[in-house]
Image 1 (cartoon, one colour):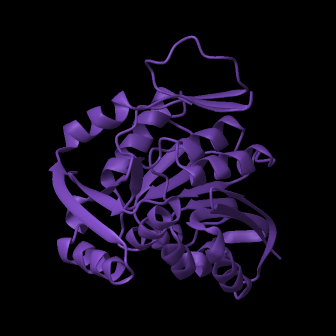
Image 2 (cartoon, rainbow, N blue to C red):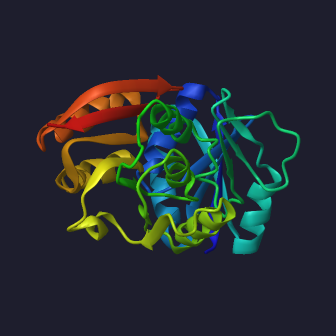
Amino acid sequence: MNYAEVCIEINPFSEETAELVIAHLSELAFESFLTEGSVLKCYISEKEYSSEAVKALISEFDKAGCVLKSTAKIIEHQNWNALWESNFTPIIVDDRCIIKASFHKDLPDAKYVITIDPKMAFGTGHHQTTRLVIETLLEMDVQNKRVLDMGCGTGILAILAAKMGAAYPLVAIDIDDIAVESAIENSTRNGLEYKINAIEGDASSVKDLTFDLILANINRNIIISDIGIYSNALISGGYLVLSGFYEEDSPLIVNEGEKFGLTPVFSKSLDNWTVIKMIKK
């Protein structure tokens, strides 16, 4: 899959404006973001990219007195891999979990070591939401629990749950074929090829399946749209761990979840990104 890289120069630059731009672009299916000085680099699959939608967004910010200038280019699939692999640094969560590439050496010991070779930016573990879900998952008992990783990306969360003793086959689902391919390869790389079943699809793929725990690190709109499906797939007393949205969106998520018998029991924020854990009564 090819990706579009959209570079947006923000003038005057502020973290608040950058976060607002990211929030709006996330609604347009942009998957990941990097900030370099006053330039925000934004990535979206080529098939999802609309230059007109980006122009309309920039126009709205111009009206508010913030000047945005954008350029775009297509990154070929093989170059996309090389770009992210060359910038992939290890992620260390205390002494409990390390996420690394195969070429990383001489790292400290940790209870769980996950080796991945990312094929896409979102899902390397560097994003705040991925770290929030990892930290939440590490505090849970998943031994022999049936787990679903919804929007699995490169498979990090599924791999961690499997290493923590989740029942297998653990189910991992993503709408992106490259993500599914990557999750399969990374499962094998971590010796879990028979413990994780990676599937290309959306929330409808969980029909007739039941789980003790569902992890969904996606985005606000998809979560709100699909939270009823997640609830139906959870056993009574099961947990739903959600992330991929900003702290101010939490009330919307909670209100929608409560319509389907889900009650929040824990939340945590990092750089205004949030994770919410809910229980099905």
